[in-house]
Length: 228
Image (cartoon, rainbow, N blue to C red; front, side):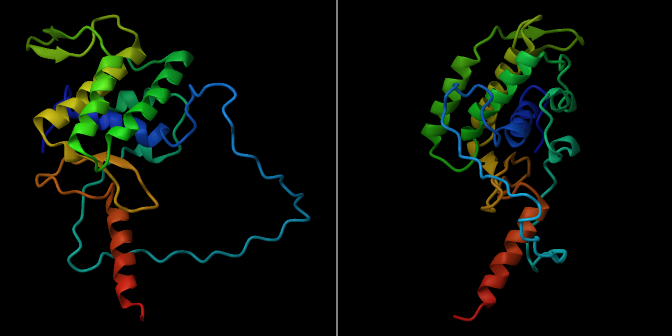
């Protein structure tokens, strides 16, 4: 399924941001929020040596296992930097340079985008997206800078972080209205939970990557062979 830059590509950026930043503490979390207690680290001499780990064998697909195209960009697979600019540039955002405050805004926005992915009631998903669209309200316009009319979600000179908010909220809404809300998925492999936009022709993708699909298939295959 093909998505253009001003629709599905924006949704793909939303997924990139969620996977990169929605697993870390919200940078706009209110001061004084209770944090998890830290475990006192023992001196090296008192700590027990870690057990030697054997290398995991390469997972092989189970016969009949469906495979899926890779979703993540190389940048997004690595540990996410505090500056989302590289992710924006990789998705074709021209004004991708962000100030420190804008970086915090975009990382916080990723936490707002995250609940829109994964299986859920359609009305609930639409309510969440309407809240994001309201929060990201901007001045959309038709641009002719390349000679062809196309839609921009914010006006020239808009704050870069505000542009990302408007673009990603509208991109997710475009998937729901013009494709299928179920294409905003979350990896079915329980330990993973990464989000993705299903661009497959059939629209039945359940995993974020081939690796997760294969690992989950192998785990299910092994479970069926266990006695009892």
